[in-house]
Length: 101
Image (cartoon, rainbow, N blue to C red; front, side, top):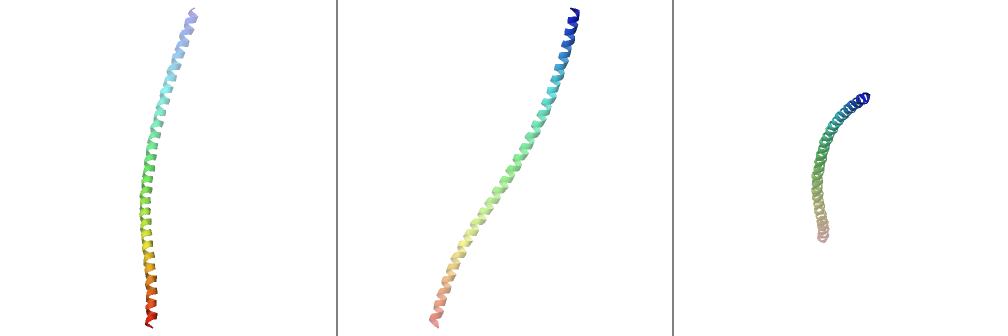
């Protein structure tokens, strides 16, 4: 019976030490995972900020391009009108010069 108690105590001590070691290992792993999580969160926030900045720049460029396109379209229409008026004026003047001759 004495041998049984000695073996029981030895096994209990060994099991308790193993559980403490396992608990310590889990705490270490938990700390490492928390550090990784914080790093990923920081990286994600930086990435999101960079994407937002780039999208904002693209929107600004799109507004500028749209404004420029509208301005060019207006100038093109003005040029067409002036061209038509010029042609009409040339035809009119040619007709006047033939009448004088």
